[in-house]
Image (cartoon, rainbow, N blue to C red; front, side):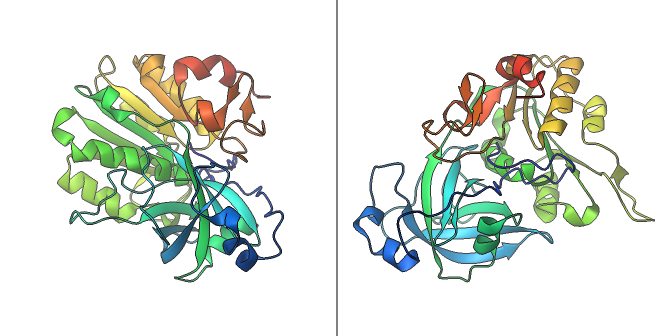
Length: 321
């Protein structure tokens, strides 16, 4: 999933951001809410937990990663592909895919902060990325289905993504790399609007160098003299070296890109049941009550965001959905 409003006109869609935010209702300001009984740690999925921002890292000109630590209690556990509702007090909340390591530890084995990579596209995301370290935010969740990369054990793994769609896939990639020996070839096919919009560029190079990941990148537009590939990410699928009979594909990005990527994968011989996509709709409640994220019979916040192409294919043929 992504979990947010898709930017259909570019490969750097706000796949992990929903610009249409929900207003904070019932409280005059953040202090009133933070001091209320409703804010206490609770099993109620509609009640956010207090987290403090420890760092805001600028990844590209409009994309930032927030590192969060719980104010009290243990950090939440999550599965790769799930999302949370991030609450900027006094502004609103927005669904954001978790982009950190699902094992909850850093490279040294220490507890890792909760990570969300956010594109600055609206009032809530602007408030979040402009927040200073120490600022408290609310976190609800995690919600939704996961990539379940263990289903791909023994075969090749193909990650296909565009722009900020790499953020919801990053936990799945880290899951695979943590047990690299259990998988065959691992390919990451990544597309971006321009070279300046490439997300996690240094990390992708490390994955290629240290973890035997075949990373292929392309951009939609490039300046004169650019030596990398120029074109759509779907063009990489046709030339990628993997065994389609044993491959499992994970796809995340703008819906237009996914509509093209999934048929390209089945055209290579990957079964639709072995292709998973992270769908984007307007998440509000996160628990299937409000209906904002309905995709015909599906509620993306609970039935998704990660769904098999076998289930999605007939729905994705109807553009009005």
